[in-house]
Amino acid sequence: MKTVVTYRAKAECPTHARTEIPVRDLIVVIDEPLERGGTNWGPSPTEAAMTALIACTNVIGHKCAKKLGVDLGSTRIDANCKFDRRGVLLEEEIDVPFPEISLTVNCDTPASQADLARVGVETAKYCAIAKLFEAAGTDLTVNWVKTNT
Image 1 (cartoon, rainbow, N blue to C red):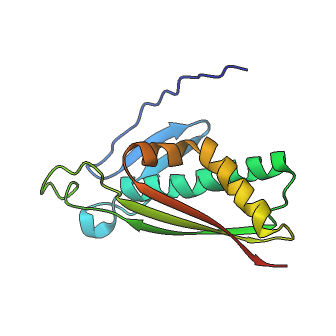
Image 2: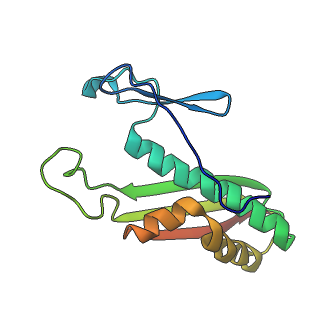
Image 3: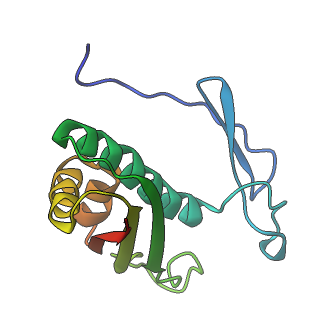
């Protein structure tokens, strides 16, 4: 298996607000809401970035849990994201558009809180989207919480 691959995409841009990107056998639609001139067919680019972080935390978290032998049980991720809109509003260039993001990974699990903490440490090492945000200067906090059982 190759360790470095090249992704390619050729997007169609049917409007100023909507972008349609073929990925595998899917079409990913990134769009603006109606109030910003979009058709609301998908998340905005900044919403897509935040949701990618949530999804990557879920996927990599479950991979790490499996490797560690930890049953995460039922999982829910809550996100709180600060977004400095001055850049997208063309008011001024912003070096860190997402200055702070906090995720809480709630696990209804038989695993201990210590096991969840280990999963969190491992996930932080491998989540590609988290790495992107942190490299960009985002203060990213991810809390793994045992909720029941």
